[in-house]
Amino acid sequence: MGCAILKYARARKGRLNLYTLGTAEGTMARVIAELGNGRVETLSCSPNIENLRNFYAYGVPPHAMFFHGPFHHLTPEKVQQDEKLKTFANGFDIIVEDTTFQMYSPNRFDQIRFVSQHLKSKGLFIFVEKFRHEDDEEYRRRERQKDHGFKARFFSSADIRAKEETVLTRMNRSEVTLIEIAETMRRFFKHSFVTWNSGNFYTLVSSNSAENLDLFLSKLCPAAIPAEYAYADLPYRLYEATGESG
Image (cartoon, rainbow, N blue to C red; front, side, top):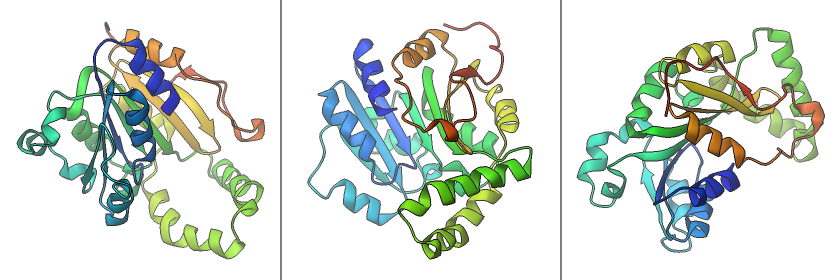
């Protein structure tokens, strides 16, 4: 994804503003900003002080900023009033939400509505989320595949159980299905594509600009995911395009 964002930025005129929420210490945003050589300005956010410290561990990264707080504290007024954040006052060309919404609630409508205040009219909103499946057994089967076929290579059984108890239980309660997210998305975006899948995780790219969305899709490279973890032929439209677009 980061490579596609950088290629997309280079293919367009002017500076690109990127906002990532849920990306911990903002590693991807910092790398894109540095490699962009001024073509990309990035903002990352997290409520965890450890992520703030890691973000600035080696000094102030070029063309990259960090907002210490949850995403719902970053209001348009906050951006306008903060001297450093003012550089993003005109909005973002790309917003990336990485498994953040599901840590708070299943209310995707209000979450998307709030964050979309920062998105330019023809911008791209990228979602990386874990989705519930209509078939509970299929959902659990994919989870077992991930835990025993992948995680077990790097973590002990005790570590896997501990994460499930401390993090995943809360996260699972706030997951939605692809059908539910599609119904919500179409209220905000004319176009939405599924571009990546691994088990119960999917990446969605949405926009009101078919031109910008097509340009971004053209910059994506094939995902390095073992075939047995992929459950869809990608990319595909999440729903039929609605209305006119630019």
